[in-house]
Image (tube, rainbow, N blue to C red):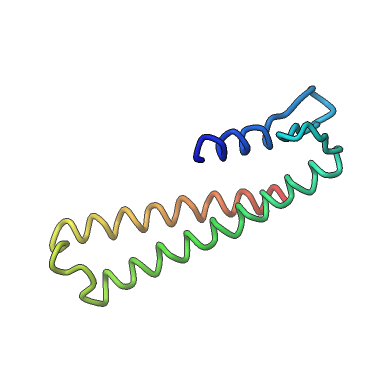
Amino acid sequence: MVKAFQHFIVCQLTLLWNKNLILLNPRLMFYSFGDFFLIAMWFKNFTLITTGFIVIMCLVMVYFMLFTDLMIETMNGTKRIAFIVVMLIYAAFRSYRLYKLLQNN
């Protein structure tokens, strides 16, 4: 089942011929350039939404680690501080990538 799904995804995203940008799906149906453009726009919007969600979740996790007793039994002291720093760095990195992606739009 997983292999069939992977094959389906690979077939969906296989690009043929340089400038025509035609996608091949498992049923051997071809999509036009306009359809490819819509799919590319959907992926760009999906990337924007997921990146924004990840940044928000990182900041929420940092907030809970700083101001609540979340996971205090397993993470305390240096491990907790290191985790908070890593989450802040990751949120900053994803924010920068989101900014660059929005700038390219």
